[in-house]
Length: 238
Ligand code: CA
Image (cartoon, rainbow, N blue to C red; front, side, top):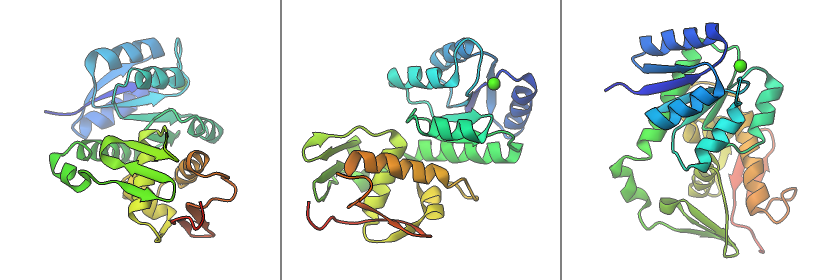
């Protein structure tokens, strides 16, 4: 059965182009041209993935994203932004979107992202992966992480993460003491098999630091390796 993609986009030409290319790639496509209609379709039809424009009539993409996440509905969402400054703005909001794209984008790029997000989303529910994480608990300094139940504690206080932040944290911990480049992180956590925008990595690292570091300007867990990327370390004295 083909996967169902919900496209919420008020610009008819972009919506039509997306529909055409997604259908050509074998997906079933639902279209909504305003925010309210988009949210209703997302709730009624439970699509496998949502391509969600930011600026929409009746209800914008930010509100829709928040509404869906507040209902604990687990639809992967790719946010579409019109400009780079919008991209920076929404990245800072911790909306729980799975990916972001800035217009204009090529149909090839859209399909690649859709595939990457679906692959990642599906694989996190594959039973054979459960074994890997079963009963696994990480304790590093004051940080305790239980990957299988998506829980983490700092000094016994529960921490709240977006799904992507949590995945990034677990990946960093699993690769403790190794220097990881931004491209490696994009590929491992976002499953990009092409050059992506590494700002998404930096923004997620900064969110993680705000949550786990005593002083996010002097991080003890997540070190910046200048010109290369990041390294997760066991802090010396916490
Ligand atoms: Ca729009």
